[in-house]
Structure formats: C-alpha cells, structure tokens
Image 1: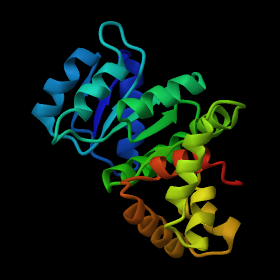
Image 2: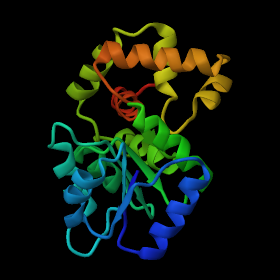
Image 3: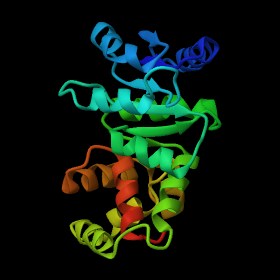
Image 4: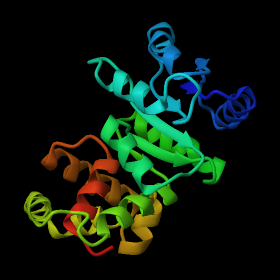
Length: 214
C-alpha cells in the first residue's frame, strides 16, 4: 500500500489503521507530483490517495498512474465532497472512492478487494454516484438504453446482485437477497466476466446508468 496525502498526521493515522488490520504500507508521498516515482520505487499493490493536494491534484496523479500499463489500482480517500468529485475520480481511472468519514474499520476490506481486482465504493460515494445519475436528465436516454442492453447478458440473479452492489459488502448483499456471501461473490465475478469489467465500482455505475431498482 502506498499512502498519498499532504498532511503528515493523516498519513500516520491511516498507516496505523491499515497496519492494525494486517495490511502492509510500503511507502508514503505528500503530493501528487511524487506519486509516479513512489510507485516505481515501492511497487505497491494499491495506491490510497487524497484528491486535494498543494501542487498536483490526486485526479492528475490517478490519471497518470492509470495511463501506465503496469500501474497499480488507485483508491481515493478524501474528506467527502460532491457527486462531481466521485464521478471525476472514477473517470480518471480510480478503482474506488472512500470517505474519511466512513468507518475506518471498513477501509482495509475495501482495499483488499481492490488489490484482488475488485472495486470499492464507500456508502457516501455509492450514494453520490446513484444520486447523480438518477437526477432528471443526468443520463441521456440512449446511454440508459445501452446500459440496459449490456445488462441483458446477465441472469436474473446476477442483475439482482448488480442492482444493490454499490457500497455494500458481500454479507450485506447476501442478507438483502437471501444468498450466502460466497454466492454473492460468485454472481459478481460472473457479471464482471460477462461484461468485461474488473471491479464492483463499474457494476455499480452501470446499474445507476440503467436505472436498476435498488
């Protein structure tokens, strides 16, 4: 794990939380202009990065990492902002968006999921994505129709899981749909494979675009 934040006390606090949950923090950086060098030096599995920094923003750094064929996935960890911030981070290539206001004990699980090829949307971020795309006129009719067409390759149960994937753990989805967490994970894996996706964040955005009933 590489932690990128311009506040030293924040990096220390995040490192303490993550290491207490068994994650290995291999390095830190205090601004976006240091990220590429830090990634090359430390070769982290995941980059945990703030958006607001003094010289180079997290969005720029995420875009630079995403442009590299061997770039690790990035997860935003920031003081929660607007729906626009979430959308911009995902558009830049972030595999997830977490808020510093989310329970810290949930961060490690999200990061492990991203390291394994999944995605991470904290409750606030997931809600923001859905709210933004559910707003009148936010999704052009042709884009919504295309999203619904994409979902036709999924089974009924896979679509049910995708509809509620945003911001929820396997256990929480299972409790909603009367499935075991293992079954939920299998449905998500098959849905990603059929759609050519790599993480749950992409599934959540597709569900919002298609207007699935959550």
